[in-house]
Length: 289
Ligand SMILES: [Zn+2]
Image 1 (cartoon, rainbow, N blue to C red):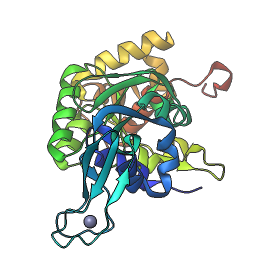
Image 2: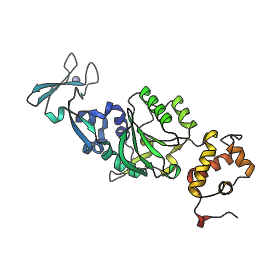
Image 3: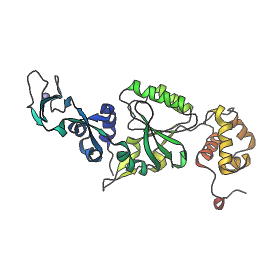
Image 4: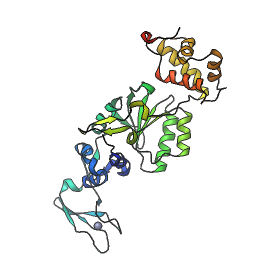
């Protein structure tokens, strides 16, 4: 089992998920094999080609000689790296077939994939969560290329999606106090692929410790609690007393939580939230009397 940090970073580093294949390879490094089968040639010729030198004006620029002949030329004033002749395919920008690329990843993460639908810049809806802590919630992927992209994508999602949802991101690099506060206030589940996913010996994606590695912003906002309870009761066809019993809390404690009178980190509040997230135990596991 190993992590694949370069793979996740590459998604945020390749702007617009659009680059020549050599650029994708340079970004992904040893993880390029996960991306290569899903690269699709576009009709646009790229402008940049990777270069071993990290100084000056490099990476190389791509020039078009016509008749399908291209070359990557060093931008450094001293031309420290040699020109590389390129064929058409090598010079064309390639984008990523997200549906194909994400399929094994979403499957490992227990997300029921639908065809990814773009909703605004760098945001896709991916399907519904089959994870215990977020059953049936919609899952959105956010791929940002800058901190401000990330912030506006998060704000848009929080505005447009009324209930709870799962937000999937490749890395944690654009997480900030501001966005974190907003995400937590809504009890949104935040999954970072870099933290969540491993690659096993056979090169397949696997989830680290299933739900343990998942960060759950636990508390339901106080104003949303009545609605959440109502939905829960409808889903499980149960009474408020069943929730209290499953959480092992007194009626007074339950109402203290419901009306937001007890702090969220109190044990009884955490237990109630846990029941609401995970659902009621199956009847044959009923141990309460
Ligand atoms: Zn160069």
